[in-house]
Image 1: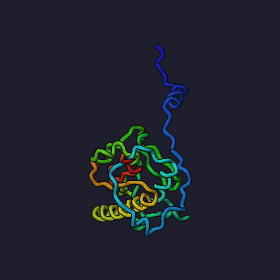
Image 2: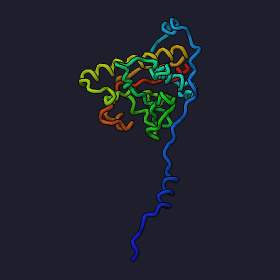
Image 3: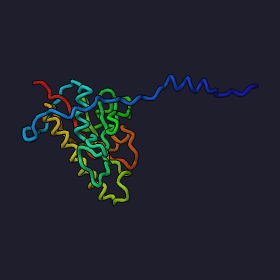
Image 4: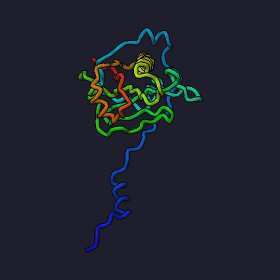
Length: 211
């Protein structure tokens, strides 16, 4: 009796039937315009009521660039990080899935196909708001620092990024709220984080709910 063999054509057929998700190329961020800085600071505020309206790809690109995009030829970013470690990754969750923001290529790398917005926080609105950003510290990028320093500096650096988002939202008429009430263990599973990654904060962004 001939033994069954797994032939190359079978493997190729499986690959074609189960393709990997492709990265999403974002439009080039618009780095001009917006409200004057002092007016933006005056209008900065927290909002917790969101319209379900999706953000356009252009608005999402502008938002992520403002948060932690590349703003110089040497690869440095719009927010500072200790020793320029750039250890904070931004995960973007929408109704279409979860993605990792690739600042260098201005793209979204797929992480999960399913809608994991509800896993990004304990407040009811996170499950329906158009975008939830999750700031994740990658301790592997922080060298031989002590655990105490890794936690301190990654939290500080996350604060810079989240404030950039607040200012962008104030300039563009968007609502936002930064959140610490997060089931970090459950979120780590949803985003497929490594043991040396830690979700620091989440931030919801969307258009204000119409009253």
